[in-house]
Amino acid sequence: MATALRTVLAQLNIRVGDIDGNLQRILDSSVQAAHEHGADLIVFPELSLCGYNAQDLLLRQSMQIRIERALDRLCTALPHKLHALIGYPWHEDGIRYNCCAHFHQGKIQAVYRKQHLPTDPTAFAQRYFTRGNEPLFIEINDIKIAVSIGIDVLQPEFIKQACAANARMIVSLNASTFHRQKQVEREQILSDNARQAEMPILYTSQVGAQDDLIFDGGSCAMDAQGNLRQRAPAFKEDLSLVELQFTRSDCYIERSVIIPLLSDEARIYQALVMSLRNYAEDNGFKGVLLGLSGGIDSALVLAIAVDALGADKVQAVMMPYHYTSQASKDDAAEQAKILGVDYKTIEITPMVEAFIQALDPIFADMPASANDTTEQNLQARCRGNLLMALSNKNGYLVLTTSNKSEIAIGYSTLYGDMVGGFAPIKDVPKSFVYRLARYRNSLKAVIPKRVIARAPSAELAPDQKDTDSLPPYDILDEVLRLYVEEDMSALAIVAKGFDKEMVMDVLRLVDINEFKRRQTAVGPRISKRSFGSDRRYPITNLWTRGD
Image 1 (tube, rainbow, N blue to C red):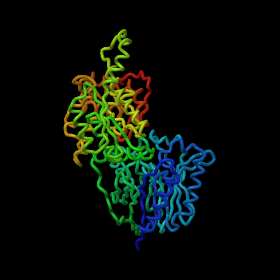
Image 2 (image 1 turned 30 degrees about the horizontal axis):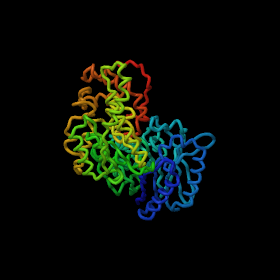
Image 3 (image 1 turned 60 degrees about the vertical axis):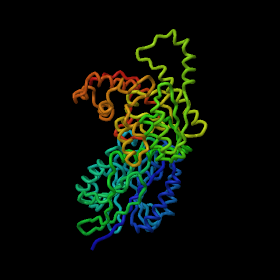
Image 4 (image 1 turned 30 degrees about the vertical axis):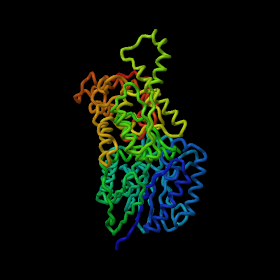
């Protein structure tokens, strides 16, 4: 006779530091799981009480007090018949653990301490936590279940523990950070481990965004043969019911709902929209504003902003100068009209000329370098000042529109186009910006075709084009990917067929512009290696680039 086990994977948008709010989300989800889904078990994300990644909030003494209070509340308020696995930090005897509690019948039945701590620099896990050294197995409806947190379930040692204990199923609590290929990689490892263990693996993951980190959700279930039998939607909260039937020798997942994977462009676009929405709303901004230049980067950021927050909370500002083309003015005005945002034009010519006039007597006695960009930078800095003044006045968050290619090589102006509190496309290479723009227009045309078709230009000098000083972006972006994301040396990149002089020039630009990147706004991480917490290079850097 088969034994049934109904498990809900609670894919929630957990907020860092919002212990009371997270507690209420857990309670509401548990009531829904018990009453609407008839669940035996509900599994929440890793560290779901305090949020992930709480960083040095974990070091505060008051954190433990609040966690203890939340655990007491869970004991009294969770549905008594429901089994619940809930993640939280725990501090005792000077040691802090990443824990999961098994709640049932009004009390904590058992506690699991995460055994494997990731070395991923976005997590800083070993700064805050000590490894546990004991597995945890719980029994529900006479089914023995192995409990894991985070990367535990990916480790051969953990799989061996589960098999040695004759467990029938593995459940895993996660707050897995997103990058472009993460879901495919995640499911492949889970499939391999489920097949090796010969038991199902149920994987709950967080959804939402925290500073530069994105959590894509995609909670899933693998059967004992390693087949995907359940996948929750990406970038949305979800209570996913997994119905299992256990016989004496086998296990079947009865309910199979597999949400299809999004395309690469759709996945990245939705990640950027969610990240901006969470950042603006969670930090209490009334709205956002940006400089709309008529170029591709600001056009894409404007579309993301409207999709994230609504047109009524977005302001776009065109700030033309002598070199701003009529096409740029027309395209910016057209896009603002299509999207229905508040649109303003402010001429910067008087401001720039006032600066130049004030500086002329001093500059007259100073030699100009061959690549002097002083006057160009003044244009960008006047625009930056105007945006920040508007932000101060209306409380809107300024969005920086620089892409990853520009940030990598320093093709942006400190205190100019780099001003702002959030950079939505900070980790998006220029060549992919075009792909995202085309994708957004495939849903509804909101970016003028000419913006996508025109050659990219900062329009800071007569007839200026990006390719005047840079390789074509498809070539530049691949060199940058190999150097920044794959950590390949100059010689290894050249060996792939790239021009040596060009490679050395690009790598030099990356290295000497670290000081600029330290001053950039936070932006969502979509690659395996962004210019954020997961890439740390010295500003003063005398490293030889050939090796």
